[in-house]
Amino acid sequence: MRLSSLRATNRPSDLPDDPELARTLAISERALRRRFNDAIGYGPKRLDRIIRFRRLLRAASLRRDGGLAAAAAELGYADQAHLSREVRELSGLTPVELLADS
Image (tube, rainbow, N blue to C red; front, side, top):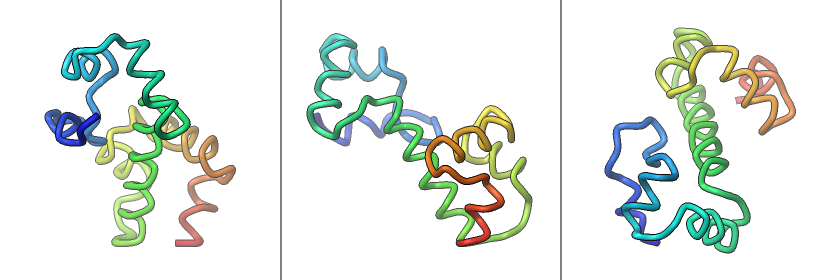
């Protein structure tokens, strides 16, 4: 799988959705998930979440203005609750706890 195939979208994480990516690579969605699992240990949706989470961490280390709602909107979360839920699932901390350490 080539990374250049992943760059052709406007989504905040740069990953197209699974069906679009599978079509671009000319493989089935099932084969796409299997290849992701074999290569990195989890599927494309989880990778998408991790990329967005890392962007949150990077953005938080660069600036402290705007609050969580602004960060959620900027980074492609549906809303602040979505951001909070994913931060807790991926880090085990609330956003405030996590960002206090950065």
